[in-house]
Length: 212
Image (cartoon, rainbow, N blue to C red; front, side):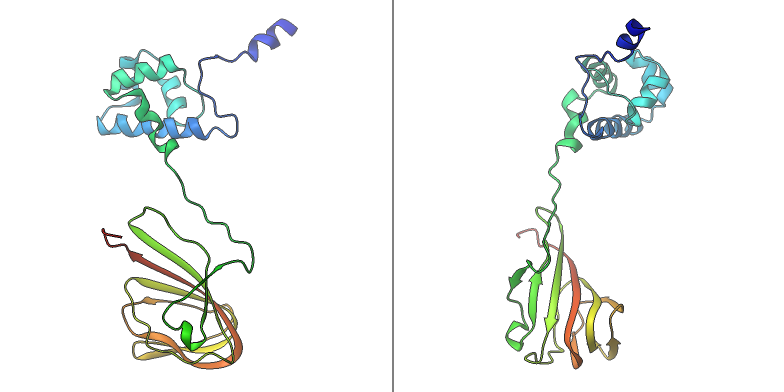
């Protein structure tokens, strides 16, 4: 019995395992599936050309097994792509911004001189779509400033206080828990600071210029 258990736990030294959570297998599987579909091939058809069972190919595509280099080479020949193409999504850099409470980067934007405090909570890198999350604080030293106008869309989520917020020709009363989503190309901004201090989350999204 001990002998059988030992064999059952033997791992192919040439298999490509991710020691943490199998993300590598999942990334490889997605690429294999995408290449297969681009060639309009079924699982059975690709498996036959690559010299493996349809069940094994299905496991690879679903990230349920770690394919050996020999298996990947067979798939690369069958799909007419280099072996390295199976790893391209896994190697992509994925951005993440982590900001501890109260440690957002203070940013000077239009309205800062009117006493509006902006804390940038994150940003995107090398993407066509720009997303800028801000924590905005208004105090007794803040002025109303209803004429912000910029490209993209904006989402507000009220956290503290009460404010009358204008967008185009309409005014909305925002209290904690309320949200407002709007086209940011129209004039907008706080119209009446009703209960201080006021804090709300602002998320601005727009398409970057190609030159940026």
